[in-house]
Image (cartoon, rainbow, N blue to C red; front, side):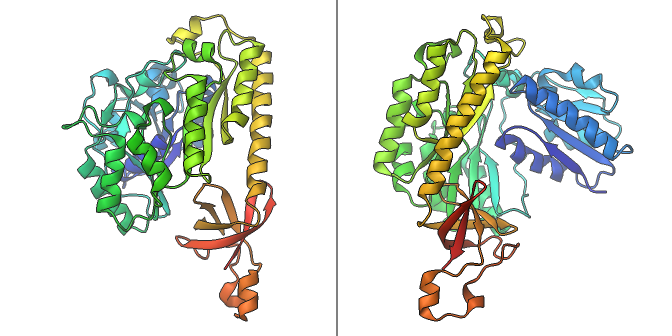
Length: 431
């Protein structure tokens, strides 16, 4: 059986899982679990995934890697289902997947200075690919363990990124997402200190065949004018930005050791939407951070409407051993749960209102599989068999304008008219 890769966590993990799949190609009876450590729940889900995978394939070797394996190697080494634990540096060494490799191999990630030597071809069955441009983080948010799982910030040279994207385009990829741990910190460690914006310009200039480009996430305080101009004026830069806000209260932001204020978050979104109204905003928000009172919670709730957050990722706070926030006065667990629920309800209401506002509009949809795809603003769309009114009036034959809700059209960008909303997914009729 081919190598099975189970991925938890962020988009960077998705990209790295594809690289590991290629590195381990040819191995027999191998399961690679690429773990996440962002919350205690993520670590718990990793353990669940390991046990589930071993039950399904008891004869397979299970190798655990990723951030949770990097910061808690002994936790996974103690699991009887696990054959080997490897760190975030070791997972790009093909020797780590050989049967004779040592059982626990996790080095000091803070000593790593190279960047993404694993730029190999992959994603052959996908229309969207995640390309790692940066890894690690130099900031120390008080709730976050990830810098200790990923190391210090380091960037991939632009030339390698351009060649990687050209290869992906040759494999049929239509859309690329630039990803990393702290993408907007790209460049200072490279000769000439290029910026993220200059990297994007270089990609668009040297890969004219790339029609759709996205960022995985960004820190609003690091969005310079050049990046703002690209986000609002470049048609190949998709109108969808995911912000790392985390909270909507200034005191909580300060205690989190974030570098932006509430006003800066609101102002950034206002400027973006004034210049390009169709931009859809996503954001991460943490519920129940230590010392958070009712007023601070209300400020985060209001931020969803004030920043028009239509893709809210809500995380209940959980203390991570080794972080400063774990030593702060904690909010009771039932209160955290209730606040997370409230944030999700407001975010869901805002999202539904946004999706309903798109009914009657035209959208360009990249078809992915089973008749499903995403518009440029990342709204989910399912292709309908309904004929558009324009096609009807032209007298075109039904089969020329109907699109079945199956896998036909995969990899195509199709213009549709949004005719309905069903279960959180827009229904589009092709022209």
